[in-house]
Image 1 (spheres, helix red, strand yellow):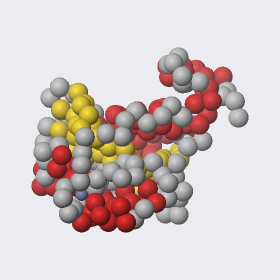
Image 2: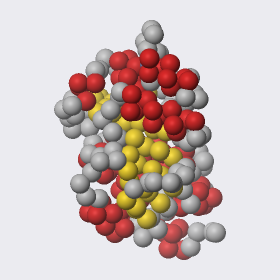
Image 3: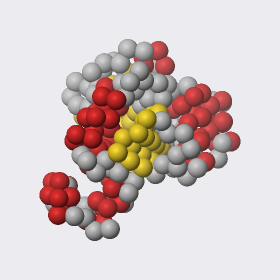
Length: 217
Ligand SMILES: [Zn+2]
C-alpha cells in the first residue's frame, strides 16, 4: 500500500536519505520487531523504532510495567503499535537488551539463528556498550564480551550508555528497510566519547557455549 500524504510528511526526514525510498518505508511499516529485556536503552530503542515507523513492536522479558512506554510510543507515532509479550510471534527482527552474556543469551542467539531471524544484542557495562548482529559461525555472547575486555560481572552496574538504544534502533531500521546489515562485527561504544569502534571476536578455546551455539544451527 503506497504511503499516504500524512505519512510522507511524517517520515520526510528519513525519506530524503539516499536509498531510503517509499518502498523502504513501507517495509518498515509492515515489520514486526521483538524487543527483549529492559532498561533505559531499551525504552529509547522502542521510541526510536516507533518514530522510524516500525509497524509492530512486541516487548518481552522482565519489566514491571510497560504501559507508560506503550502510551509514549503511541503518542509519538500513530502508525506504530506496541504490544506486551511476544508469545507465538514470528517477528522480522529480534533485539535483545538483557544484561546477560551467559547460556541464556547464547540460547536466544541460537534460537533466532535457527529460525532464520536477525538477532541484535546490546550489552552495557560501566563506560562501555557492545552491540552485535549475530550470524552463523559467530562466537557466543560471552566470548564477544571477553573480546571487549569485559566480564559478566561488569554487566551488573551499567553506566550511562543509553545511546546504545537509539544506535540499536538505527541498526535495525536500516536492515528492516532492506538497506543491508551495517556490520556483523561487534561494535564497542566508548560512553565518554559516544563513539563506536568495530571489534573482531573469536571463540575462546574449548568454549562450551560457542559449541552449543554451533550445534543449535
Ligand atoms: Zn564462547
